[in-house]
Image (cartoon, rainbow, N blue to C red; front, top):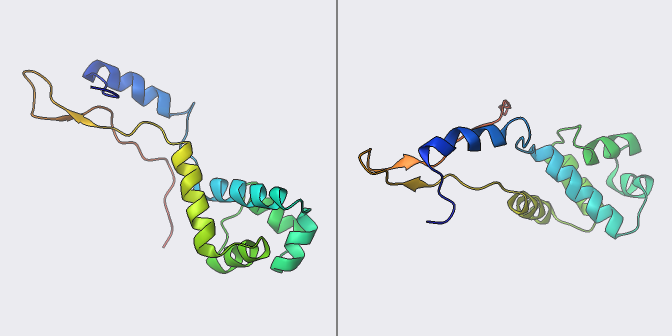
Amino acid sequence: MRGVASIAGMAEYDNQLEPNHPEPLWREVTGRVLRRYRHDRGERLVETAQRAGVSTQYLSELERGRKDASSEILAAVAGALGLTLVDLVREVAVDLVRQARPVPVLRSVPGGPAAVPAAPIRRGPYALAA
């Protein structure tokens, strides 16, 4: 079966996730997408920032994944780049899927329980604030 790890291989898979391949943060991927769209338009930070109504420094921090922007700010920057907020979210999701690691799958183990995870499901050390 393709993509299935043995129980012994679970530790090896787990070691591959952290710290060498940490899960990307939403703000980092969003920043990458914003920068890509700005570059595709051939614009400088100052041009996009002025249209979005944000400072050049703030837009730079967004693009570098340093700031968690509100939905209003993201909508303004996306609009300045000719995108809707839905377009931006879709592009971020596509970018995340492109860099996704293998998804843990269930498989049967002879003499064991009916199904075991092929790899543990790990969550990063980050939590969302309400």
